[in-house]
Length: 587
Image (cartoon, rainbow, N blue to C red; front, side):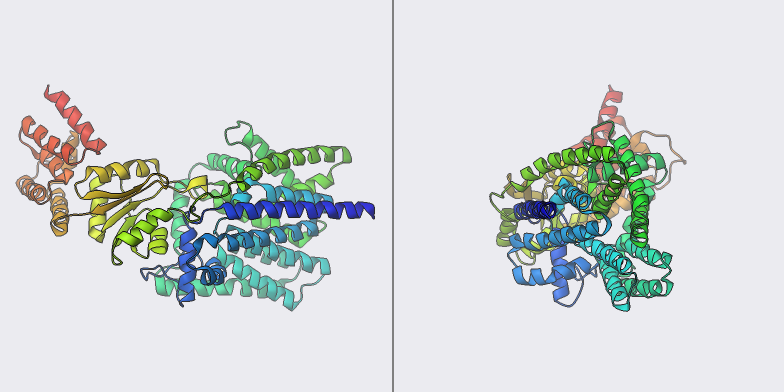
């Protein structure tokens, strides 16, 4: 009895400490510092008005509507006090922790269950996500509840119609929160069939997948595609193809080594330790299998399906480990209870060391009480709301934040490494202002490409069309007014430049000094006239001058036009390199 009381006291103390850490961490989070947070609020607000669309009216097909639906009551209650949205974030984290504890107790004896739960809860990556208004914690909570209900049915020896209906509802919600929920549903359906409940597995599959199918049909009707997620996946899969060994190493390092075990990424032995832990986790599942055959089978298949999905996804970040993190520690707990008592001491020592290390990191994170705004870029967004017209169009690298915090129309950038093409995209969209904000911190969303952040500001500063009207050093933001005297003339200059390239496709090869692939075209004179007219309409269009340099009849003309091109766009490394080579050849 005394041991039971002592264990209960220890468990209560541990749960209270973890809850306090997550509460402090959530309270310290600055809303909007993670890129997608304003997007989910916008989508929740759209659902409250009877649609699922961006503020510009465009139907949204990715992300799925499950998380915005769960957020909708909080958005309705808290708008516009966005700094209080840490409350639903903490609620989702608390639900995930509770569901993780229930599943741990279903599969492990008390000491091992408590250890596995604590290690999953104290992982710094999990704690960091606990305060963010992202679907990760809500998805984890729902997916663990589904596995818990599966384990309940296995414990009772039967899956009644009510339990199957509950599992179907949880499965549908999981898939509507994140597409990875389809992997979970498939695993649970297969596990139920594996236990001989084939008829109920069919009903479960119908209940879990039908709402998802209906939503995808809605996407196809309103958005013209089943889901934009598949397009993202296809591009990621193409980028990841061809390097299976490197992909395996990346996943071991990032998802298991860093995301689950919290090992330093610079440590050379990290992949070896990750692989060893994976072998132990597999051993643990084998040992747990006789206890809960369906549940363990579902966990193993779910982990395998997620692994296959992320193997084909080029981007690999520790955040992706969260859906399997508690399951991984449960599996390691299964390995710990299966070995001899002497070896269990080694497991206990390793668990205590890891927990102490993480607890120290967690305490630092939780102690970061916010000093100042509870909303990211609050002063910058306030300035835009106050000093721009309600009809103004703002080009930005953070469209959801502009939409949510200022109510202005937000425009995106062209994906280009060329300044003039970038400016053209802004002028063509009718942008009135340009707002540049810092990249997303913490690695939860991949940071902006290095050239983007380093080039946008020089591009704007080097153009006569951009005038900086606001800058906030603390928030790392810049706002420019875009003033093109003759937007139609500027865009016509671009069309003339494009027509010149069609008239003489050899212009780029001539500019680079490469051999021609065809005899000189008789339309050379026409191309030159088009480029002259283009440079007259917009002297700042550097590529018109560069094209004239390529078609010049003499070295002096080439240098004249190319120097004009370099003055028009001093940020172009290509033009600068060509100019240096031509100046060197002219000596």
